[in-house]
Length: 372
Image (tube, rainbow, N blue to C red; front, side, top):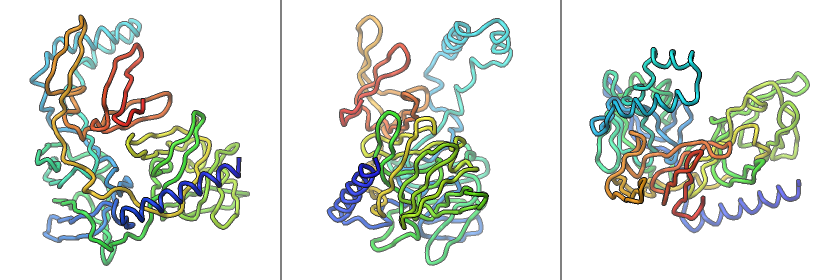
């Protein structure tokens, strides 16, 4: 197994190096970059990083719409009846009474979630309790000024590193980093082995550490360790913690924190052509990190979105054709389809989807790449 893991790591390293050479990739190419303007008029330009560890163009900005633009197109009474009937079919009398009293059959018809990769956002304007997100197709989306991505600090790394409280931010204008610019970190990538197979791509450990300067902490023999992610060659689940292999050959058995035990929030893998797959700890086996390489596609790789359009087959064999809004949330090709698939959590941009077929237990997706 050890020989296989090292071989796999070598293959990833060679592939990443070749891709970087062919594409003329630079370390800052896939990193968030732009100009942040504060309420007192201060303008800061550089690489950007949020407290929720968003740092790359394929990371997903998350908030919620202030008003759903599509609520007027639905029959709210009919939808409420459908939700109530579905809930009642699976719950007993006490739960049914609580459901009626809570009004849950009407919840969620407004304030729908807004998810978009940063590569398809032109700018974010903040005012009072609103966040106006302008996507690169020129459409403005009025959202609520809430969510983890708009809390804490927004760090701007230029000649110096400056942390700006999101409450002081008035505008963020995104742009591609200039040639030669390089952030003080490298993106983590490699192969994640699960109980069902393996995934290759960019890696976010514990849904947070995604760069070489991130810290993995744990204990061994009552001694505390804070290990930079860039120093780690592999992590394998091991008894009540993790076996951490360092690039210098040392091995640690770390326990005692959610970085290395069953409280880990999952290992996210950004897979080219497939979107983001988050593997829960119960299915995780090991990760083999590649040598430092590209940080991902540049901003030009994220084409301006289009309105979703499709042909829909309905009961009785009829078809309808036109613009599509999925789940009162997603109406553009940059929107994110999310769900649980065989234990893993998926976030797939609609532009990568070819077909969605309803099944008894959910949906079967076929991607434009042919993956299912």
